[in-house]
Amino acid sequence: MSLLQHILATFVLLAFCAPAAAQWQAEILAAPGLVTAIDTSGTDIRIAIGESWYRLPPDSRRFEAVAGFEHPAPPPGALPDARVAISADRTTRAWLADPTARYSHGVLGDAIEAGSLVIERRHGRTSVLRLAQDAVFEDIVPRFAILGGTERILVVKSYLERGSALAIVDTETAAIIAETPPIGRPNAWLNPAGVADYNGDGTVDIALVRQPHIVGRLELWSWRSGKLDKLAEVADVSNHAIGSRALGLSLTADFNGDGRPDLAVPSLDRRSLRLIGFVPQPFDIARVPLPARIATNIGSVRLQGRVALIAGLESGELVLIHD
Image (cartoon, rainbow, N blue to C red; front, side):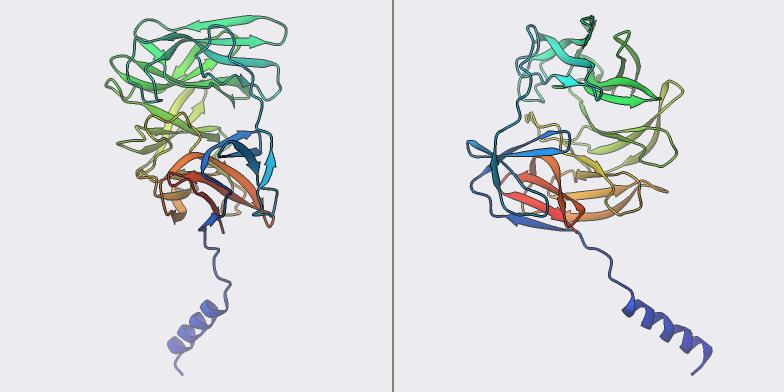
């Protein structure tokens, strides 16, 4: 046997002996009815099936009946279905208020948006960020995030003539301190997808999906020295169904075991789930075909000590996505 033949034989032997890479797959669970929503509180998950709520205990495919989460009622002046956000240290609350019909886009199911953001601190001080008549907050819930070591608020701001931007709000001054460039035309919306150090450079990044219904471009923005810099773009993604109130069709976790956060987000047609890593460049860890479009928020459960994902489909089925 020549040296080349020996090298080739050794390579083939090693290939057959090496353990197979984990394969992500979609498994439909036998739910006791049609799944209509998935709600989250921290790492806890609730699944709405018919008129009842359920959970999946760790390492289990059995549905356990539970009570739904009790979310704070919207304060006076808030959007009718606004969600009150609470900071991680539970010292600050925030919500969207001053309902207005001056922007009739209706991407979230109605033509009522918010004219202001209210920030309330535990000691009773309340600040209000009111937008000028040329913009609205086209969102349902503000998002607290630690940027540059300081807690900020992320919220979608839509200009009537220039479309949506992602605004960064200082919680102490209730002022917008940075925002992404508006998309550039009316009725063009974006939806935040996650906050983490996705590219491993020690700086917090913000993932968002630009126009998740027709363009579907994932953009990764980094918060550096008090401003936003765009780091990367990925085509063919979506994290919202038009007209839906569910904004959480994405989830951040370590999906390939390298110790870095990755992002789960549907494809543009929502018929597959993409698990995207970002180091050294954006790449698909897996792309899992689904039997129907994702329609609900995505939640995470533990399965044999590893993270797995659950989501409701347009068919009313519940899908478990795992490796």
